[in-house]
Image (cartoon, rainbow, N blue to C red; front, side):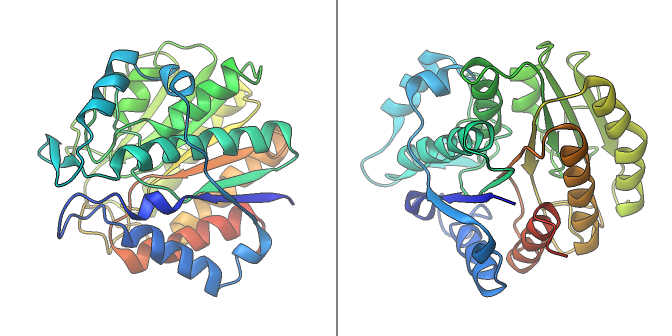
Length: 308
């Protein structure tokens, strides 16, 4: 199986201040774990290019793109919301994080790769068409989705989001687009306090109650996600891979374990192999308890690459 691992040095330079949970160490912990455990030996490594204005403009207003570029500071920080700020490297990192999703899509559609994982930050699924929020600047996965549809000629793709926080930006950008099915799970009554009322018929949102565990995840996937995916028949899967529903991550109140991430990843791989010619692009979203984040990304990739 041909698999790609995509990252960029700028993703380690973007930071939003001391003690911020969305920290550069997230990338380093994942990379170190994958190297130490031999996962990177099974993947071809690529450096992410910077996404172009045209590629970003499929998901975002051009005025927003220009405002973001103008807001980038030469030093210090610029606060965009109480949780989200830019330093001197954020603009570059955001371009390369979006570019990673574009490159991953190109590799999977055109270059014979079946799996691609983007170990990049800043994350993206909260970024709306004209608004940065929730640690996110550009919606990396939506940029990849729209690149597949508008540049590479695919007709139907699906986005699977298992971050503990609702992917409000992805939903807002993609709602009503009949070429896309988005299926997601997220904790109720948690930032960004949305998702329980879907914005379009192409959205399959499954809200999970606080303090639930992996059993309800399995119910959501088997009872809601898979039937919707089979009916839609996508040609490719995109994954917003958030690992903050883990019981050790204090950003949420769900109780998922390492084996839950392995299980959902096996289901994704199985569906892709049976229905999508094996095509999967996975992009890092949340996950803030560093040891569990690194372990669960390893479990995710082991399952996607059929290494277990």
